[in-house]
Image (tube, rainbow, N blue to C red; front, side, top):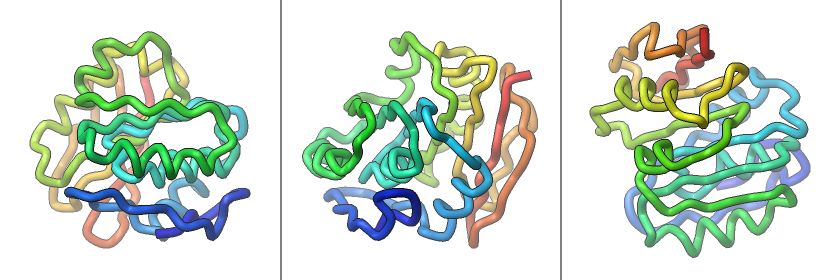
Length: 176
């Protein structure tokens, strides 16, 4: 797995043990093209896995990146991967739902890539909308299987766009 853009472009990323479904190169490249210039932004990577999406954000200029991963067995590889990054990085080993309850500041971008079998994506969007992680200018991106339908509105979040990548979609939400 390699970083697709920015100053770390082409650098290899280690894949941690256990269950992992890394975001496709083409999808990551496209998502960051859609987001545009994220220089100086704050970025939250939920269900981080290897941290490749957090690294893509760092590589493209994000100032502060937080990676949240439930599986403590992924910590060592996640730390090694994020050391490539020059930005301020934080790794949180905890369930995403607990992180959202305890977090105290907002992010400009929240990328959420739960396991495809995770059945609570709509509820998770509601929790994100009610959390301090979601500010008035936050963009939330939810990666999910294509046959799965997510709500057009979840709490204060309104879906503004969907982008198809093979058998999956990324739904873009913003507070309204």
